[in-house]
Length: 398
Image (cartoon, rainbow, N blue to C red):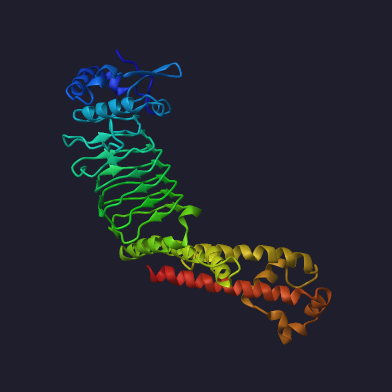
């Protein structure tokens, strides 16, 4: 009898061993191999018991490090066993899928992860090796749970994707869906994409979501059709996702968010679109620097909260300066003098102030003070204008 040291994150033992599934599969897979002249020789090499670091594992839960050392025969036996098990079994949690080769040819075989009898399938916590090709295109009547799985190589899925969960998955290489088609009720929440993710010309329908998803590489959404159920709440885009050629992708999402009346997300993707546009300019370009300042102070006029916070934080360094410059007997304290520059900009240049004896004495002792207060007033006025523009955008968008 086969033994396996695998335990699920919930502490459950290997379900293949517990249900004697492998014992039932062994004679079937041997029989299938014997009936094919090309694979008859492999029937003597079928093995379901493996060891790694002095621990026993079954064929499915044998770690990927060990499967990477397999030859074509072992990979083919695994591929045949998986497809046979898929006809009657739907729980493959924790399975490591090695790259599958077609025996006697260079063409790679594709793992289908859709059960034959219209049942939902559990592929949580699985590992998919480099070169694995998966097929989700016939999953329109079932649910596929791939959450917490790891994809070590490039993944290309043909056709359409239905009712699939990629929650908390980690994609180490490109994720590509090359054909036009539909992605229905599919979740990528909390997933991490390290490289290119290509959804161009796809139609998202139902509740397809990218909540808290991390895009570290280019995210291609050009010419996509996005339904009202699409959700990018908390989605994060790293430096690799901000490139000039990706500006149309963010524009596509931004327009969809506007049509769906999701204005916070519309503002988020407008800012991402502008950051991509900013990448077109050299570092010394004034356009680039002004764009950076506008982004930093208000996320391109879409965040009144950030603009208001920056406006308040700006007062702190000037308060410190005024605290050191103002004499103790001056009529206004540092706080009052700081806020006076907000509500009465350039006041020190007025005739009334210049002829006022305390101000005359202050300017004589600190000649640079009028220029400091002028800079303070200009920056404050500019930030206040940006704050009003951002506030107007927020109210205009409801």
